[in-house]
Amino acid sequence: MELGFRSSGILAAAGNMVRGGGLLLVFCGIQTLIFLFLVVAFMKRRNEDERKNADQFYRIPEFDGDGFHENGLYRRASVYVNSLPAAQDTEFTTLFTATNSAEISLRLDANRTVTDSFLGAKLWWKNEEDGHGRRAFVLRVRKKDKDGVLRPYLQHVQAVAEEISGQSKELRLFTNFNQRWRSAPFRHPATFATVAMEPDVKRWLKSDLETFMKGRQYYLRVGRSWKRNYLFYGATGTGKSTTITAIANFLNFDIYVLELSQIADDSELKILVQQTGGRSILVVEDLDEFFPALAADKNLTIGRTTTGVTLSGVLNILDGIWSCSEEQRIMVFTMKSRDGIDPAILRAGRLDVHVYFPACTFAAFKILACNYLGLKDHKLFPLVEESIQAGSSLTPAEIGEIMILNRSSPSRALKSVINALQSNNRQARRCRISYPSDDEGDLPGSGRIFRREILSLTDLRKLYNFLRLKNRRKTPQLSYDAKEA
Image (cartoon, rainbow, N blue to C red; front, side):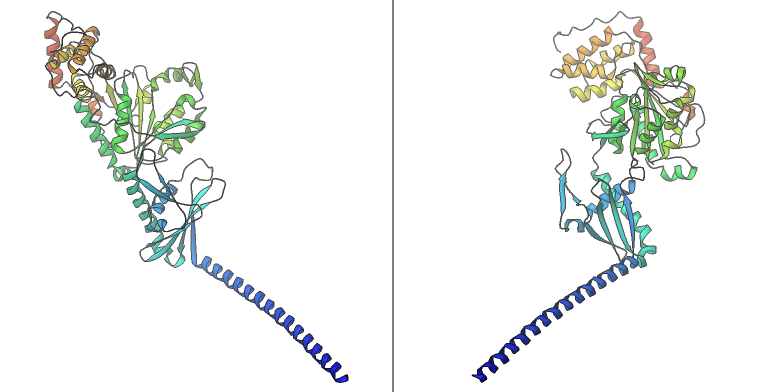
């Protein structure tokens, strides 16, 4: 009996020892895990510190400090990063298409990282977004590679982005509202081939634009801002706005239409001009409607709408520091007439080239006939030419509308045009180009000597025909419902 109690005690003691040893093992295991966790955390922190010490980070925000001016480098970095093959291999990538476009593009999601290599160095891009709409790209470069790689790499990024943008850029039309630009896709089909204007003027204008586009190094060498200012003046419907859209399509430039009546003061005007991007056309239409009020009280007025923009503010658009925030910019100002305009506005250096848009000439009429009616020649063309040379003329917009209404019958359309020409016995105008008389230097396309008008052989022939036709009897008008030839 006593032996049994001893055995039980021994077993109980053994069990207690086992339980105590198990607890000890568990305790030791927990300590080991905690130790390992601390070691891993320490090593991770150490690696992060080493990486931070070994890497250099560059942040490229979407906007500058005031939040108004877009960072051009951000836009180019976005184009470049989204074109990288590594962007297609990330865990999350957004696919999208532009409006009315079948081309599929991809965009790196927020807070994702992609890698790139350049000249044997490895680089990292992160698309950073803070949740409040503020976006930036962060470029990480090894410090040992920074001096030899960073500058040529950024130049490479910008060059590739410009090439991609030039190939796939969707043109935008911007209008200002409440100190901001709002944009919509720009899909106007006008080209220089379809613009109804004198062929000589068209060729000269295209040549001037091409010279400007190739003149970066020249403008840099002479210390001038790389921009070109044009004045288009002529009656409503003569093709000023259509020519602007043709220029935009020709150069692949966005259009910014500056509504002066929507601007409160010069400060707002300054912000809007600085927000415009490079490779763009800034347009101010019907400038002459503002200047009578400018001469009176230095405030712009349109009808019953007033704005606090001053003459000084307008001049700073033309040639001030405000206008130099971006390169490769074209400014176009339109007027119905230059008569009575302050010469300070029209001088060289502010409005570099003046292009006059007259009522429709016969050369412009033939372009319209080809565009609207598919006619390169017709037996009624001589009668149209005589009517125009006799002093009767319509604007290209008016003739185009007549052709649209009668497009099902080209002959009826031409007869309708002739009737309209003969019923509007207005003095014909001739399309010309003039320059301000002041010397603006030897910039490409400059030429103050063209201020004086020079009669061409075509003009002399028109004058001869006009004098000859004055002695003739008036040609009977054709009826709208006359039998077609």
